[in-house]
Every structure is written in C-alpha cells, then in structure tokens.
Length: 159
Image (tube, rainbow, N blue to C red; front, side, top):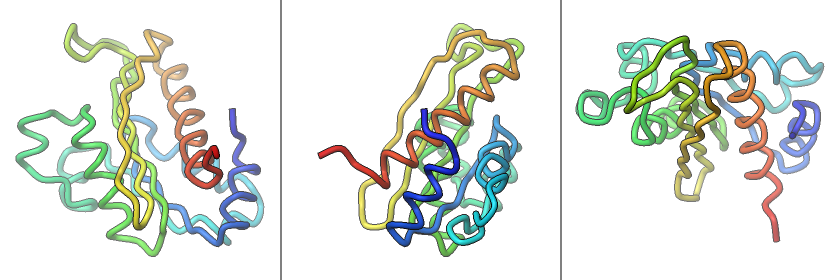
C-alpha cells in the first residue's frame, strides 16, 4: 500500500502534476494527498463529482455513457479520468466511482468501485474492484488506498 508521502515523492521526482476525479470517495483522495506538506508542488486539483450533473458539467462525461453504462461503470471512470486531464494542468489523473453502501444491487453490489487512470500520452486504464460489503467507511478507505496505489504504479512502472 502506497502512502501519500511516497506518492508525492514519486510525482515530484518525475515532474508530474496530479488531478483527482472523485464520486464515491467525495474528495478523500485529494484530502489524503493534500494532508502532506508540500503537496502543492505536485497536486494540481481535485474534482468532486458526486452527481451525474457534476460529472457532465465538470468533467465532460457524456449523457449517453451515463445512460447506457450507469454512473458506476468503467466507461464513466474512463471519461472522468480523461476529463480531469482535459480540465486541468495535470499529466496524471485518477478517477473513482462506486457503490460505497449501504446497499447496492445484484448487478452493482456494495463495495464495487470503478477506477480510471489517465496519463498524458498513454492509453487510459480502467478497472473494477469488488471490495465487498466493508461498510461505507471501509469501502471508501479501500478505494482511496487503491487509487493511491494506481497513481504510484503509473509513476513507478514495473520493469
């Protein structure tokens, strides 16, 4: 698990600015990063887009994607991450959208979180993680930790 201080050191070393696009975590990824002194050197901005309207207006997520795939989908996570890059001066963005709970459905259970990772000049990566019914706080914490890991992996790819 990557801590925010390690992530910031990696970003600083690569000269990369980071942006976040968050739904179910409500700004917790940005908060984890900005809790570290000196984060302004590498953290460009965060978008908290909890509603579908915010996803459309702030990140350019399309109506068709929201209607056809739903807010909790890899397609929306992709558009959120790409929108965060397009609407910021960052070179790296992570997005998160999911079902923190309580509740969910058979199709989209509690604990399902979709992530997007956009890095300038590279194809956007998306993935879905089923954390399970950890409770709202547990799912959100797990999503933050996973997002920090994704960012760190993008900055320090395995050879």
